Length: 149
Image 1 (tube, rainbow, N blue to C red):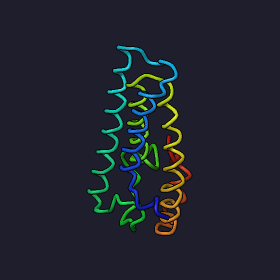
Image 2: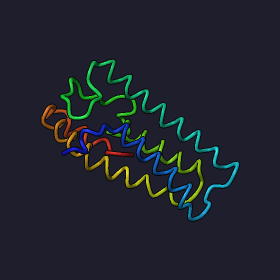
Image 3: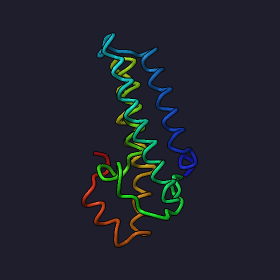
Image 4: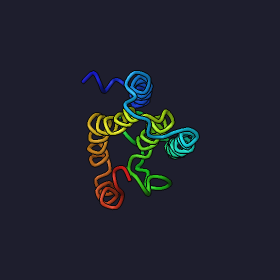
């Protein structure tokens, strides 16, 4: 499938561009007025912190962050105690924060579409691979920790 060649950060960039286009040309209604829209910066900051923390954990155990490559370890600490997909969750936070920052209604539709797309293209397949690679650990981890939040 050719869509799998497009890495998740590229999907994030496409979604951010779509948020800008929707706000600029199809704003529908203003939901978040000034100065409240600046709270989007805080939400984005949370997303960046989660992403950096997650990548640091991957580097610490010397495993890949590239989707569909074999993992050297199953990470269950740090943000992985709360979500099985903190990197994807951080991207969703960044998208939500962008929609919040621009403030109009239409950009918010991008967030659930992005989540569904990432779920279908990446998470489902990655979880299958993890279950095969870590048959003793992953099933119990999956029962304890939610996919998103």
